[in-house]
Image 1 (cartoon, helix red, strand yellow):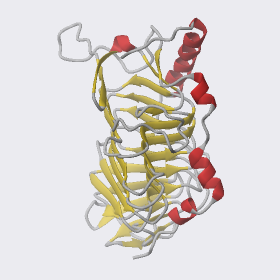
Image 2 (spheres, helix red, strand yellow):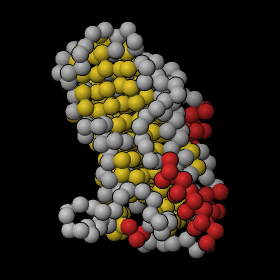
Image 3 (cartoon, helix red, strand yellow):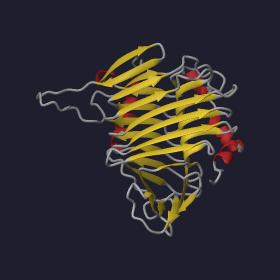
Length: 361
């Protein structure tokens, strides 16, 4: 059931925050102050740098060209951009400080059972996955090696932008937790990008599954594409979205679908919170969305307006003038008891250290 803020002061805060978000999301072009200088691809089977910037025939090569057939990846060390064109291989890993942009062309896939992270920038910086040509990327990670499993992990922000179509399926069969996307910073879905995430952990409790997991900065959704976040297959602790510091800001999505198990997040430091959101509040304007819910799902569908009858949507993406309403996820008392579970695990070492150690083919 949709709820609005009861306090004007809190509502004003949400309005200011949303306006700032809209201004920040005017452009999603990746411009990095410190681009990555090198990157491993294919479960560390090939190292890309300025000397060998191409993946041809499954090996790093000094010569291309990138054609989506013989050569399926190219790395630009000046911009820190890895272009994938019909890439079908193992995990991608940035071992040193630097931000990574991944440009998608054609149909691409990452599958790994030897690594624990599909795109791994856990010791480097931010990750942007984008496309100018409706390129797609499917990430499939299955692991039971006692580590935290992630489709994408970044020590900064993670952004899905442009016309990228990204799907992530993570299955933890014997570790700590499954995370579709984990970011130390914010997670952003922008422009016309689409995202579909399934997170599941079948290992013994305490285990957990989160489609999106942001430690600081929250989740920002402002896209004309579809977003589906699914933790419904979880039989123990789960939340569709885990946010330690920040909120979930839904500015726009064609259709946002949240699928959950109903188990809730009770034993993973979550203090008995809901199955949908742990931490912060869910900010959105209900006048711009049709809302539907039932057992195990919530669906937010953008309301379009075709004033001149030409078949085009006259409403532009961005911050509505009416401001945000907020759908509280839990009480302030519960928020005050939150602990940074993932960061505590990270500081303790072990699980993320293992995540960096892919096995060479």
